[in-house]
Length: 244
Image (cartoon, rainbow, N blue to C red; front, side):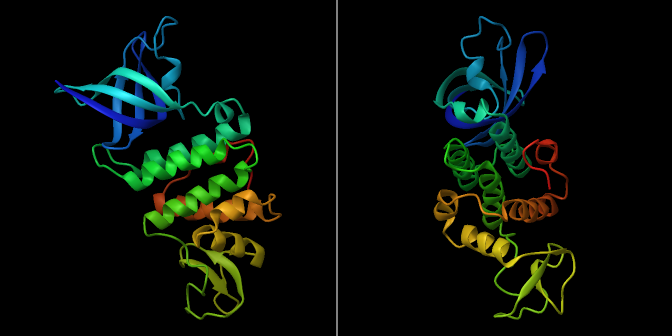
C-alpha cells in the first residue's frame, strides 16, 4: 500500500455498508479521488464531520490495489461553516461542487480547477458576497479555464464588433447582434457584468451591490455551463435561491 498526503474539497459523499461512506474529493495533486471513510457514520468517528460536502481538508490516504483509497487522517483547512449553515449558500456551493465533479477526472491533476473551487467557496463564505453572483462567476471562469467561454465582445455569428448585442445563444457561441439574433434576449447590463467577470474585474463585481441583472447573468452562465457539460445541473435546478 502507498501512503499519500494531499488536500482536497469534498464534492459529495454516499453511504457504504452500515458505518462507512465513500467520499468524492477534488484534490490538489491527484485530481478527483474516491476514498472510503471507514466508520465515519458512527457518532464516535474521529473525523466524520470533517468529511462533509464542501469541506476543505488535508488528507492522509492509503492507496492499495483496489480502486478506492482509504482515508487515514483528515484535518480541516477550511470548514466553510458560513456556507454550510446557510440554505442559500449551501445550495450555491453544491452547484459548484457538481460542476467540479463533472469536469474533474480521477487521477488527473487539475490545479487550476482545484484553486478555482477553493477560491469560489471562500468567496461564497464572505457575507458581503451575493451567492447569486458567485455561482455564475464561477461557471464563467471555469468555462474560460476549459477554453469554452462564450463570446460576448462581438457577435458570435457574424463576428462584427462595435455593434449592439441583443441576444444570447450558446449554440452559436454567445452574444448575437440584431441581424443574427436567436435564442434568448440579453440586456447590455448583463453582458457588461459577464465581460467584467471574464475580463479580470471579478473582485469589483463581487464587492459591488447585487446588480439588477443578477438573475439574467445566472441564467446565461448556467445555460453555457450545461451546454458545455451536455447535461442539466441538478443542484442548480433544485436550489431554492436560483430560480431562472
